[in-house]
Length: 87
Image (cartoon, rainbow, N blue to C red; front, side, top):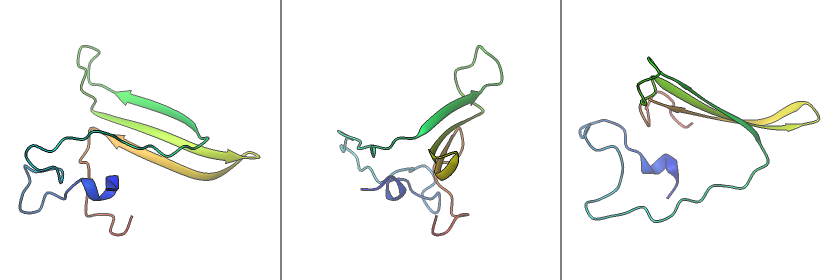
């Protein structure tokens, strides 16, 4: 199952965030192999809090000083939104 299909939109069941059913367990995650340069940044309200206000991970595929592709992931926000139809 793709990560895009794994998360649910809030809709009629806002308390249910994923397709996991009772008793189901994630036993493996496959991450594609890619040669990207990457960076992760976590912004917190205070150093004593571990929960991020927002976090972002960025991975860039760069060839000859040209960005060929970019991947961006945000944390501390909704896992999925219907604002980006077809993303």
